[in-house]
Image (cartoon, rainbow, N blue to C red; front, top):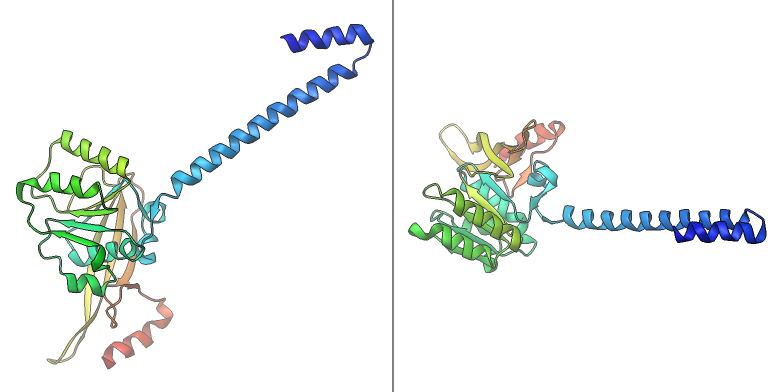
Length: 252
């Protein structure tokens, strides 16, 4: 209001409109500058929040909402230790510490072949009735935690664990169903190669991995080697290379 009064007084004092126009232009310029600054701040904040993804294997990342595993979120893997190792491979190779709770069949040799760094891997095979407390404790200090619940936890305990994950920025991967999972990863259409007419050995396996999100929408699927003939986890190549792949598999 005082700016308007000063402008009117200026008009009467000098008998012209130029100062008023200049004042209005300066005000508009200041408002635009503030808006630009607010937009930049919002953009920077959005970038920071959106970038809170853990590096993930490209074959898995392409299927996940947002293109990767989110810090503070929970994901479910449907009863496949091999698929679980494939999911862990990317974060582990990128430097994340990983903990596995309540999965005694989780083999370190197989994990190493998938690229999981054993120097940054902690296993708690038999947590017993304390599985939830152990999972929460490991989530305090490690970037990725795997657990297989022997029974369903109460809603209150689930809410407290979810809050701790968000606070610490840890990612939880559950073998089996879990309320409010960001996504469920399932494995189907498994086919092995390498066995001939009564001879040979298993050399490679192709599977279909499907990701369904809690927000609905169409599930995403991809055909993957799990593992390929070189014991690597990779996406199946384009159909144009199928003939050469078949020849290679027959050779091994």
